[in-house]
Image 1: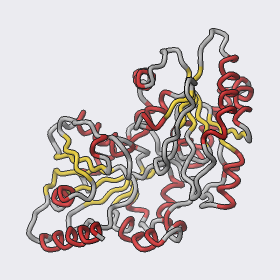
Image 2: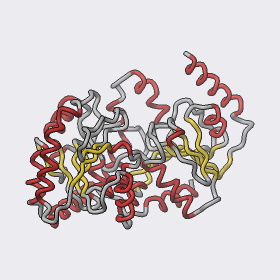
Image 3: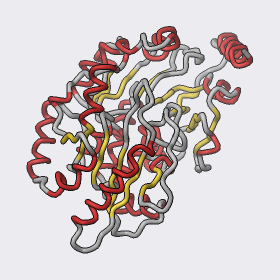
Image 4: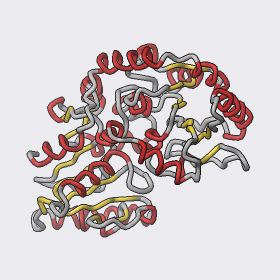
Length: 381
């Protein structure tokens, strides 16, 4: 009740000040939906501005977890739905998010709302088809998405399907690729070393990233698969003739609680490192169910393994897919213990060719220059 009264008061204040408070045309607010730290597409746009155009814009980072955001020169962190958040917003020209726009923000003439989205490709169903999942989505869907002025698209299929899914004109789509994926086109060894240092791992360590996606129902507990993962690690170690060791980073979806890792093992909590793109850069292989990280990871030409049973279950019992898995180029397993033997038999040239065919089919816009294109478009919006 207290929160509802606070939000009502915040909206009323915005309406009262609507015509009297001018916008600051160089003010930008960034928000990565319900995430800790500086992450996802908003982070990479923020970093691009700080590096290429320092001092040109007033930059504000909105967070549900402001304590997780280390102080950064040129950036002010504000807590989401705090009074400071609304006070900053009423003079903000550009509000950039990786998902939805807060329904409690009263948009006025001249303000620009942009969604970068938070996944590449166009795999899982989103938008109006999922609005019936709960009352909140149904109630606020229009305020969340249909006030958007622009939507960043990673590929032609994304533009076609998401325009319908969110009720947006195709002209609102910026077909520039995914800003966070610019990192994947750059020199990656320093990023890999950063991740290894974070987990106190030797420089020669190889990494398997296990990153399941979001489901309506919580999946099985971590402890149920601990023995299988130990077998996977042994199998991967045996592949390395020079004694190189493997480690597994287990990263849950941000809607889920991070699991406790078994003691004295090479199973590490991937949620401890906030930036998923840096984990993708560092990883040698990715295992997931239907996470859109498959799009990002394959841009680097690395092996992706999908859990076949999870795919089938999601297709039959959950949201389902826009682009069905039979059109994906990623390898499938029913048991994670199959991975070492499959990995040893991969023809990497054939794998990369399959990825390129898929990018052609999807009409990829990924070039590694999305941040610069975004800022060029922003200045003209």
